[in-house]
Amino acid sequence: MGIVLAILFILQIISFMIITLLYMKIAKFNNLEKKQQKLMQEMDQSVMAYLVEIKEENDRLIEQLNGRMDSKREPEASPSSVFKAESAAIQEKNLQKPHSVPVNFAIRSYQESAATTDQQEMKPLDDRDKAKQLRAQGKSVQEIAKELGKGQTEIELLLKFG
Image 1 (cartoon, helix red, strand yellow):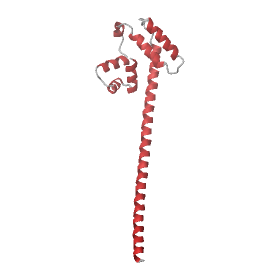
Image 2 (image 1 turned 60 degrees about the vertical axis):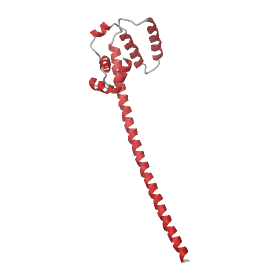
Image 3 (image 1 turned 45 degrees about the horizontal axis):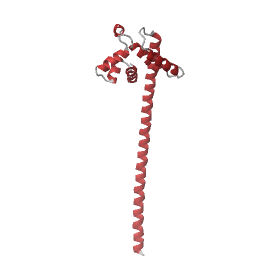
Image 4 (image 1 turned 120 degrees about the horizontal axis):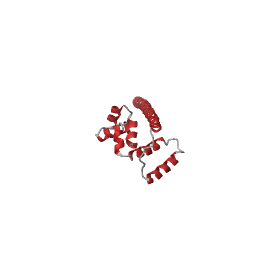
């Protein structure tokens, strides 16, 4: 009888140790889960801040493009008739869309680039031309943005449409 009680006592101590180890593992996993949730919240906040910054840069760029489109006149040298037909079709499609400003700007940029190089040399360089020159010199988008005092997204768009 004494041996049976000793064995039961030892088994009970072992079971308490196992329960304690399991409790410690659960507590460790709970702490890990809390840390992961905190990291996910921080990442969400970082992404949201980045998206807000991009949205502000895009809004500012669209405002500048609208101002540029309003202030510029039509180029004297017109592109080929094929391009005119294509640009007219694109403009008709984009008149129905609220975000047609970048497409119209791209079309106008192309029309302006079809003008003679003598006319372009007489004009003072705008940000788009400066960005192109700096890109041709091998500078990165970040360096161009710093030099021109613009956002990186704006520079990328200027280089893409230019």
